[in-house]
Amino acid sequence: MGLIASFGKYLLFIADVFRKPERQSVMYKLVVKEVYELGFKSLLFVIFVSLFVGAVVTLQTAANMQGSWMPRYLIGFATRDAILLEFSPTIISLLLAGKIGSNIASSIGTMRVTEQIDALEVMGVNPVTYLVRPKIFALMFFNPLLICLSMFGGVIGGWISGTLSGECTSAEYITGIQYDFIPFKAIYAIIKTILFAFIIASVSSFHGFYTQGGALEVGRSSTRAVVFSSVFIIVTNYILTQLLLN
Image (cartoon, rainbow, N blue to C red):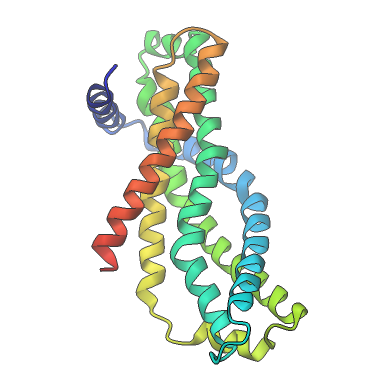
C-alpha cells in the first residue's frame, strides 16, 4: 500500500475511533486500566532516564564553559532550557514511542491474528472504539504528567551532578534555573506532549489493528508502529517549533 493510501486509511481509522461513543461507565473503566498499563508502568523508567540525562547535560554544559568568562549560574539556565524545551517533551516521547508504542501494536496485533477482534465485531462491539479510544485518552491525560516529572527529574539530576562535581554551587544552579524564565516555554512543552501522546497511541493502534498473518507479522507491525510514530513526532516537533516559538 502506498504512503498516501496508508495515510488516508489512517485518517478514516481516526474518524472511526471517535464516531460511535461507548457508555461512559465502560469507557471510564477502560481509560483507568490503560492509564495504569501504559502510564504508571513507565513512571520509574522516565524518572531514571531523566535523572541521568539531566546530570549529563549539566556536565557537558559545564565542560563547554571551561575557561569562559560566562557566569556559572548559566549552567543551570542552559540545563533548564534544554530539558524543558526538547529533552523532556521530545526525547522522552520518542523513548515512550518505543516502549509504549510497541506494546500497543503488539497487543492489538495479537488480538487481530487470534481473531479476538472478529469476536468483538460479532458481539456488536465497535472494536476500534473499544480498544483504541481508551488508549488515546489515557496517554493524552497521563503523558503530560510523565513529562512534568521528567522535567523535575532532569533538573534535580543536573543539580546533583553540578554540585557533587564542583562545577557550580547549589545557589548558582538554582539562580540559573530561575533566570529569565518564560512560562510559555512550559506551556509549549505540554502542548507538544499532548500531540505526541496522540500520535503514539493512534499510529501504534493503527498498525496493530491492521496486522495480517501470524506472530511474525505482529513483530513487524510493532516495528512499523515505532518507526512511524517516531517519524511523525520528529516532523510534528519541527512544525510546532516553527509555529509556537518563531
